[in-house]
Image 1 (cartoon, rainbow, N blue to C red):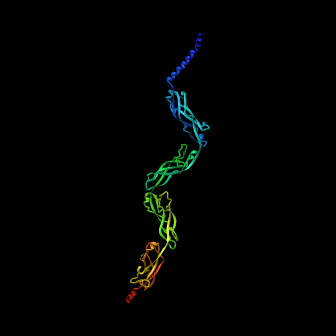
Image 2: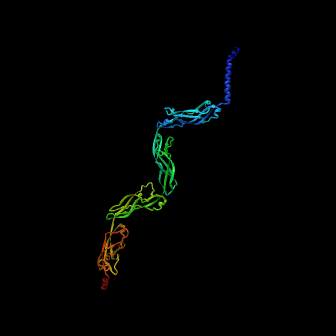
Image 3: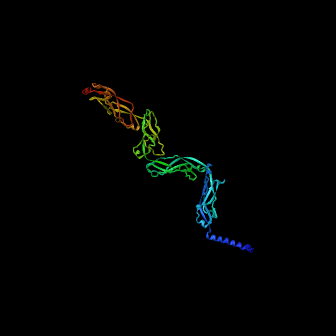
Amino acid sequence: MKFLRGLYSNWGLKIASVLFAAVMWFLVTNINDPVSTERFTNIPVTFRNTSIISDAGEVYEVLDNTDIISSVTVRAPRSVIESFSKDNIVAIADFEKMTDDSTVPIEITITKDSGKIDSVIPSSTEVALSIENLATSTLALGATTSGTVSDGYIVSSVSTDQNQVRISGPQSVIDRIDRASVDVDVTGFTSNIGTDVSIKLYDENGSVVTDPAISMNITAVRVNVTILAIKTVPINYHTTGEPADGFMLSGDITSTPDTVVIAGKSSALSDVTSINVSDPLDVTGLTSDLQTTVNIADYLPNGISLGDADFNGICTVVVDIIPQANRTITIDAGSVTYDNVPENYKIVLGNGADDTSFTVEISGLGETIDSVSASDLNATIDLSQLTSQLSDDETLESGTYTVTVSFTPPEGVEINGTVRVTITATAPEEKEKTEDDE
């Protein structure tokens, strides 16, 4: 009984002893392995069950970088903290727990010494989302070039191995996109280019649209750029037919433009000095200028193309038709030449009078025919028109004949109608008698 009374006596002393022991344990523990805190930054958040959104035909976008926890503060004994790293912190956002305001709570899990961790305090606890309908669009794929090729060369064509691109993403983003295109820098090039180029998306103002929420079925295409040499050459035309009576061609054909830039391989261009329009311009029966258009592209040689992107190949052509000017010229006997005169025959114009002459009407441009003289017409009488019908034993009889006069007028001068005159032919015997009588 004395023992029991001793056991249950002095309660105050016993309680004090227990508190003293606890304090001593706390002090020893903190001195040997004190509690400390460590701040770990930029902890990524892993998403789970995101198919909930995609299965509903929607897409999401993380707002304000809330898929990254800027800092997580861990409190634990120093022995735990010393071997702890940010890799031991796992942050998970389960989309099945998404709230009505499109936020997903973040759950923090510690993968090492979790039982020894006093506390884990993240700087943020939820992921904020923007959720929209998923939109898809198919765009024609354009192709352009930038820069300038070397002098004497042009970019003839640009082509791609794909002509469409399909894009998907949030409705608001897809609605901003106006076109898709690729661009190749051709600065300094003189030969064809083949290269792979990334596709860029543009809004209606020409600004590039970049958004990680956009997906494309292709992100790059093969682009082929054809580069050709260029050359400037004249255009040649010709006419067919005759204008109406009383009208004539002035000889002027005006083309707008009158030269054309052509493109092709250098070897092909070297053989081309002009573009000849093979189809004639028909002026038959016209009394005024012929005005028409000609597509020069139809007359380019093989391997040659138009070399000016601003020219569509259409030329405006005017064939000048003017009233015909006429003039009468008197031709005297001394201005006539005789061909194929039988030997020893005397041939004179008219009935033998020395002052015999005839007139001829010429036509042409006024400024041309004004300066023409009788000798310029080269009037010729060919006696074969009389002798060709005679047999070998026949000779031309002396007498008066009507014959046709031929002319060789200067260029641009025409003889109007057929000119027939009278000549007198004297056979050798008659010639001798005439001379004796004299």
